Amino acid sequence: MTSKRILLLVLCSGILMTGCTQVRPWERGYLARDEMLWDADALERQLNDHIFFSKEASSGGSSAAGGGCGCN
Amino acid sequence: MNMNQGVKVFLALFAGLLLNSAAAVEEGDQVPQLTLPSIYADRPDISLPALEGKTLYVDFWASWCAPCLTSLPLYNEMYHKYKDQGLEVIAISVDNPAEDGLDFLEDTPLDFLIPSDPEGNAAEAFGVIGMPSSYLISPDGEVKLVHMGFRNGDMEHIEAAIIENLP
Image (cartoon, rainbow over all chains, first blue to last red; front, side):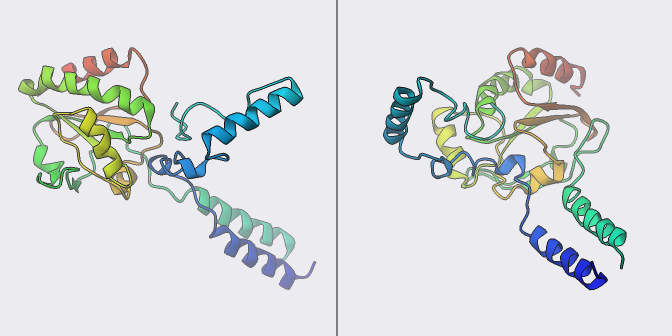
């Protein structure tokens, strides 16, 4: 690999890294909002869980306790 | 630039990204000098330097943080128990929007100081690494206890530390 290609790779990686950010502990409320859920509609979620249970004979694993703050 | 140099630059950039956070306040440090607006629009700003001479218990909380909501009524009891001996409790709300915190306070009135920090500037200054986090500060401004999380039985430990550091 030539030096120019390596430099280009490093620069591109550097630019892409500006899109990375840590969610700080005090910002985790954003993750706890309803719109951050995979299934925001509780009724639809229950229906999907029921269908999953009927087909797979197992349930659970679709959600976790707490609001995503990592403190519960 | 050879391959090894490229990898080193890449690692340096990655390390820089990981280290891009303020150092956390630890026991023995001096308390950050902060002034924050009260969560209540009709109450004055809350300044930590102005409270020097009192024992401060600074807590970071949010309405989406379940253990925080468990701890706050207990802190209210503790505040009433020791306020005449020089304890001041400052529970900094990091709710954004701040109205989320006010909704909780409507149902659970608290009598101590409640500043609002929706942008997380105070949390950044303290280097909060988990919610809830609380800091016991002696009358001369030294951090005496850093307490993270809140579980049953924690109050005994916190109360003992407060009694030890009352003015």
